[in-house]
Amino acid sequence: MQRRFVFGLGGLLVAVGLVAGCRAAAQPAGTTPRAYAPMVAADSAPGLPAGMVECVVTNVVDGDTIDVGSCADTGRVRLILIDAPELSGGARCFSRESTEYVAARLLGRTVGLERDVSNTDRYGRYLRYAWVDGELFNERMVRDGYAALAVYPPDVKYRERIAAAEAEAKAANRGLWGVCGGLNAPATPTPASGAPTATPTRTPTPPATPTPGGACTAATARVVSLNKAAEVVVIEGSGDLTGWYLISERGNQRFDFPAGFVLAGRVEVWSGVPQFANTPTRLWWSEQTFWNNTQDDDALLYDCTGRLVQRFDDGD
Image (cartoon, rainbow, N blue to C red; front, side, top):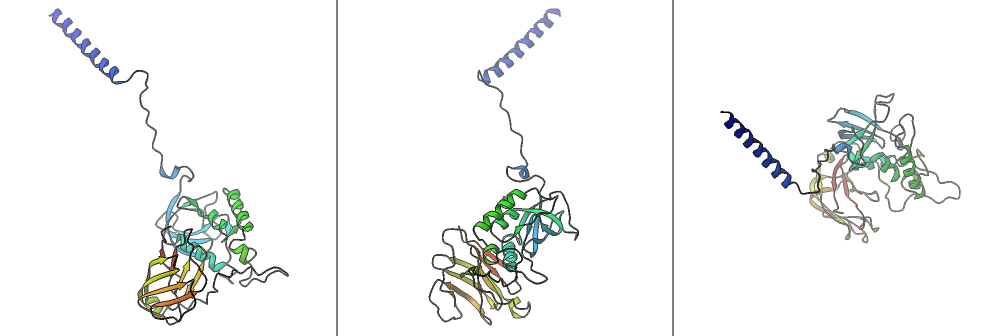
């Protein structure tokens, strides 16, 4: 019995040794076991802040205030460290353009909202930075000239970045700096004595927006093609397009559909060509060329209430 036990123990030791030898042979000499990198949360990716709340933009109040939903921050949001021209209480110079800029880029989209120090302001609005497509929207808006830097401590996390963006916009006379000379100038700015008029020649002056209601709200229309080289936009749909308008996003040029124009299937909107008489299927915009052929320039279609109906991607 004792011999059988010794033999069994010896066989077990041999088997263990063979397994260890096989494992050693499977690991090439001079290597170390493979290390697996820990998974990184999406909101901690380089360049993006951690802890963002994702919300859907449901309404654009003006150039620095939005409404959001479908998230913990549902309600009204005031964008931090920026100030856009006032739209209410007496519209200021570039207030309409600033509001449309925000609507074109944020309305209906999911954005990341980042808190600084304060949660809300004295009006109960959430104080947040907005991130979209991996970019700090507050900073981008100032760099493009649609808002100015506004510092209200203690919420100053990105003050230096946005200050640099404002300096760049001023140096290039972008947006409100070129048109208005500064923030919250009168709606029709008066040029300084001896200074050239800053109003751009390429942007048509939009007529007053008609009162919402009537046949125009029942109309349906969508951009189906945009040929930037030929300067023609094709729109399909039906109904009275009085008060509807089209915008070339890059230069913020605006085309207003003629009062009483009824879309019956398909219409072409032409620019960059000599003026011709409008017909039910062809509308003339301007002899100037508007569409940017080297940079992204989407077509934005708005209804008679000022609601963004469609952003048509130009493919760039």
